Image (cartoon, rainbow, N blue to C red; front, side, top):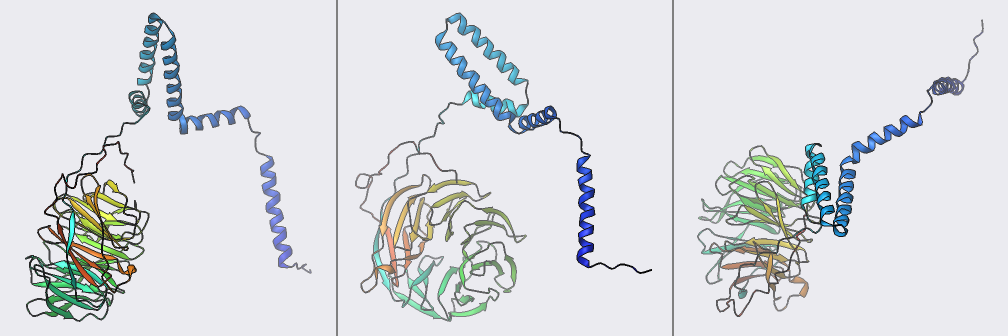
Length: 447
């Protein structure tokens, strides 16, 4: 018996036709749709999704009608209407607790929300430039103060680290070893060590008794932009362009943790004794609070809309600040709770610093420096760093700001290859430099 052979196309078409006919038959067997049942189903869905909203709208309409009745009625009628109000509230009280809370909140609150006036800021003396130090041959990118407050170090794009006398501004020594721009410096509080990092991917530990490199920390895959030393543990933290922050054992050079999660350059890393012990800010517009023991992210703050280039802790309060071109934000350190915005410094902010007196300073790419009262966010002074003769106006950028150990001197490192030292104006008083404070009601943004 000859078997008729069909092409694959024909067989597939027949299979599809059988399937189509089968489903068509099933569809024809479905019961008819009952309009009343469909309407009831939609009503139940609407009540489940929007019942609370509808109840609040009805309550507001009822209260509005009652006010109109009270305005146009006699005292006896007003009394009867008030009785009906109490009855309606009793009916509301028998509803669910969540609905009751919402209802009571709507009744108790006024249509216009009351916003507390901003507290009066503390008076701070204005700061003035009193010394300009030259010596580097490239952009000066970073600075660090020695714990004894006698001298400080600066790192530059000329690949050299220079040690300066803080009192006189004279050069003490130059340290060479990096083969690219030096981007971060930190002194150890308990050892005679200086740590440096740079765009050459190197992280070095310098012994200041011999002025030599004694350790290298290898692991970063690209430029290292920031570093910090833990105040009590022998731990070094570095961060850079490879989107990671790394935790190093200072003595064994072991890479204890690689803190991954950021999706762009990690521009700043800071550390403290209390949890969260590590906080990072990145060009991916986020700030991360890290669990140092586990090496994992605890909280990610996404409030900033632009890259976060600078972070700083308050010296005494359990708070920190972050800087971005959109604004400066203050946070609680423990859980990353947002406190307030400091708006007005409309530039690319490269650095932040704070002292115990409650002065917060932000420095930007255009050479502008804004000084803020930490508690209230009041901007009490604006400075423009003077560009040195022979430099272009575009070289007015401020790359780092550091307060000395006493908090009375402020060191900035800049794009005109100089280091500038500022101090408070001793001749200023509250009469000569009054606070330009207008106690109007300020509504703070929630993000």
